[in-house]
Image (cartoon, rainbow, N blue to C red; front, side):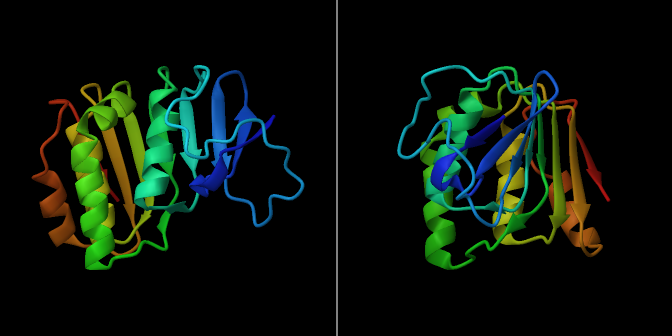
Length: 178
């Protein structure tokens, strides 16, 4: 089963087993038949039966985050997110401020989207401002979060010290920094 998720750059959803899906970013989409387009939609017509979601090459922008929130809000059984890598993040002050402002305004949507999440893995972590903020947002919202696994590219005890001090919605949330 293939699903195109529009301009999210999370382009194809492949079904794995009964309820798990894996998001893949292929080099070309010409051979993929879209099943649903997120476009500028903020609510999908149906509920997705996602329990586990793997995202490759996540490119962060306000537009893409809004589409990702739509996908997550419509996946009420989702409990696990695996982000292989955050790539090509625009670290300009304007872009970063725009993203932070958007996420602050969308606090309720973020909380709803992350409500059932128990495990998050972030691979190829570089420690950019945007990655750190993404982790801060993820830790601050899901009340059932048990585990946040961060796989770093280069070891940095300073980043670990900062991450450990972030507020967590779940008192049981453990950060594993490898």
